Image (cartoon, rainbow, N blue to C red; front, side):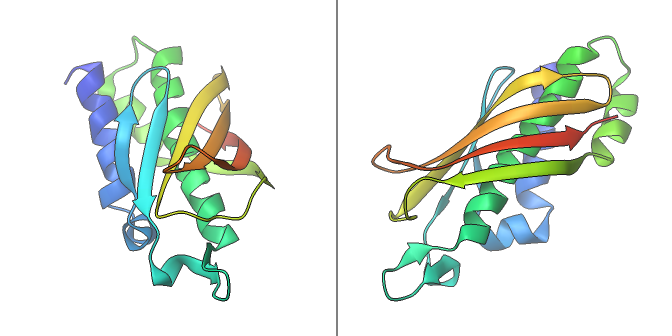
Length: 151
């Protein structure tokens, strides 16, 4: 399997195999060596403030965390390009969020949201990723920084 195929497999696993991500309705929009993005539609089950109809903060954090986790896995692949595929998959299976900081910049208004992630640093055991969530108008809703255990 080539590296792009492996990236696609990892992204598909995050969006289709994890029940909570399926519940939110996360879809992989883009996954490459430099950036990963996931998107989802707003729906009544995801609203936190029913009076204003804005997205729940936990959904915002979860979507940002998923984008960051996928990017951390891609960072692991980039850091270890010669590692055997099965060894990479075994490490990725142990991937976990160590720390996640979310800055809620604006209320989560919109009909479609996109969380993007970029690697800040990928080490042998830990990756640091910067994430953003925008609505369909490109309005910034939240920023995040995640630290992920990758080894």
